[in-house]
Length: 450
Image 1: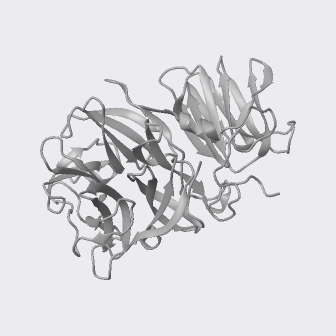
Image 2: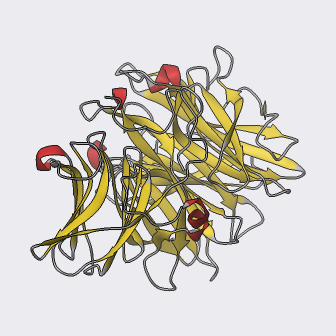
Image 3: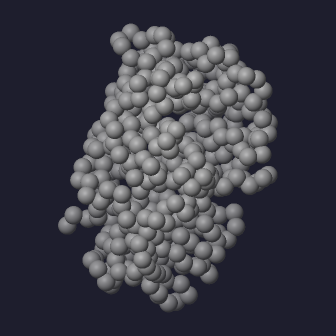
């Protein structure tokens, strides 16, 4: 359900599917540390494979920094591989060093492989293939030119690249934009003015382009200030783009879209952890979360729903305490659901983790009512689905992914819902973990140790 390589944490990633149906993930990786330095620790891509997008097998490191003196000598960040001939071309972020003010200098490089499984990469030349153009983008302090995503152009035989950039015409705190460039051969790129520049975003990271069934386009972009991601749609790549609002709530980041084994279109994303696996620890790089079903209504806002492919990982209903579980309930008026308490077993303790809903508001609280997260819905919810895996909590309102948070407090207890002056027990379905015996720094949190 959650994946990180042994002893490491995951950041941005890319998804591939080989001809035999095997999935591969390439991901930024770094060690668990109290103070994470992405310039010194995110210097390689890990790789893992899966048959179902749920159970991942670590396959080691697939790519790393360039030689000293090159544009990618300091760090390699977000990547995007695309099919090219009989193999693949991979566009990736290279960091050469720092500005006088300590800002990372970023550009986009290219590597090729004769394979389609995410291995065997060789660099194209020693320099970048695309850089920020100072006519439209910041190129020094507070610059951005990273997270490339490349698709075939819908108006030519060439290609379009989108990147996370900084609009030079806007203040730094509002300059987050999607930059773009075009190419006829993948190696020579012409940079254009921003494709999307909202004017109220500090960083618009990890842009993703997806062709829709009606021929239009979906763009997903991670928002730095909210740590969630939003959606835009357009009839063609060059726009006009319509902002559709939040798709992934705070705590879900760096989305990627892929076709699942059942033929449906799903989104995977990262989710954070806390240093030391305690509620007092700072948020840090985390893990790869389980897939969500991507629904794209015609002329409507896209949404993420529960993916039925996860049902095979759920057990039979029970009312006993379970740490990893899914529970469903109807909502009528205000309700608060206790998921964990401060004592073991059969109830009677004080709530340690709760989820509440009063129709249009959904929230999660920790010990002593500490607010962990909140979502305001566009329409009142009639049903809730709650998922817990270790410290992670996700809430679906009328089937739509609405809230995610994490809490390391409390012990498993029967789920109880308090509403209209009475308390009832909520049956849950235990979640079967793909690798329950893992025992390393990246294992799913097993609950309190004492």
